Image (cartoon, rainbow, N blue to C red; front, side):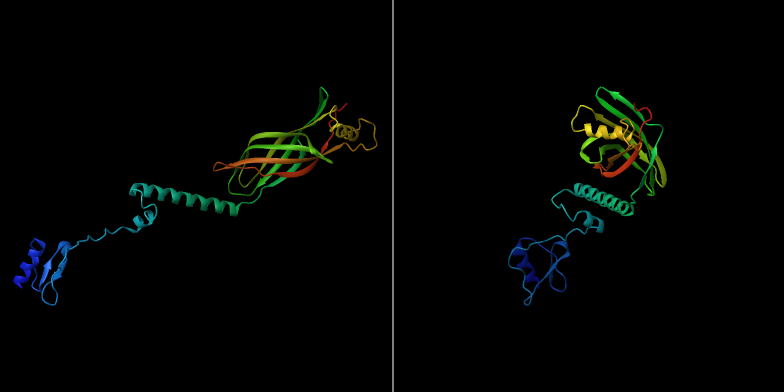
Length: 247
């Protein structure tokens, strides 16, 4: 046993303690067997350290981007978890979202009329209520509207705009929306529209004097969610009373 021990040390040029069972000590409390049945290694001994155990959280946050330092992997992991949480919240709110009920309640105040150069202008204040049954309020950066006369859908004859409109949650919100119809008498594409409006308002003496101006409109509310602009288009029509001062 003693000779085997010295032969092994001569081979590796160092001294290691042996055990009573004939094992030679190595690094990391590793032992190699000696004797006829278990000869000592004849080549260089490669010592390997056991890998450091990582916690479950460390494994979770370091599973990707392994080429980055640990602090950078943790930052990437935290940002990823924040994005996932925001996506879940947005998904839940979108699933529970109910389209508000928009109702046109006529005019607020009396409509007015004036002439500016060759253009006839009809001004209205529309009374609109929005019934929002969602748990979250909605703030529109702006609401724009375009007016079209029936049969002339390719030519806008006016509209309106209102900024910073807030719709309360679980409540009915009233909006007074300014709306203008402007028709140029010298424009060949709108002359027929002006004649029809004047006829319905009783200016031309026509029997087709209904006292109502029918317009088609497109409303585009602009809403921003997490920097993303959402602008749906709502199309409808309305009957507006002729201004009493049309002359």
